[in-house]
Length: 79
Image 1: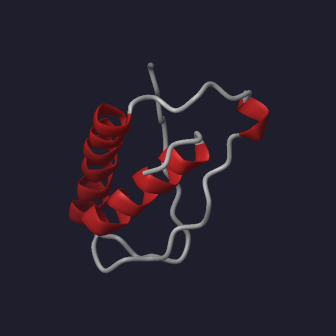
Image 2: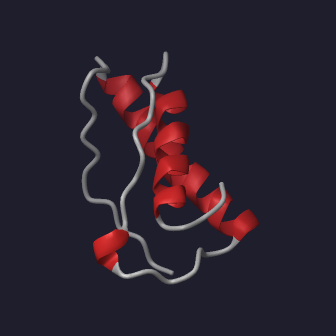
């Protein structure tokens, strides 16, 4: 599986440059962990992929973990 996320847009959270970098790193690390532990989710047509809302968190890293989980669930995973 090759997943490429070009940009993450977050509304409702004010993140400084350090938190922005931490968010990106956390999304990558958590998606890697979820795909390693849970395996790739069953194939689904791209038209049904949707990530559920994520609550804002106190740090970029925590928000990144939430976003990764939402993306994985949107792909059909149980993470």
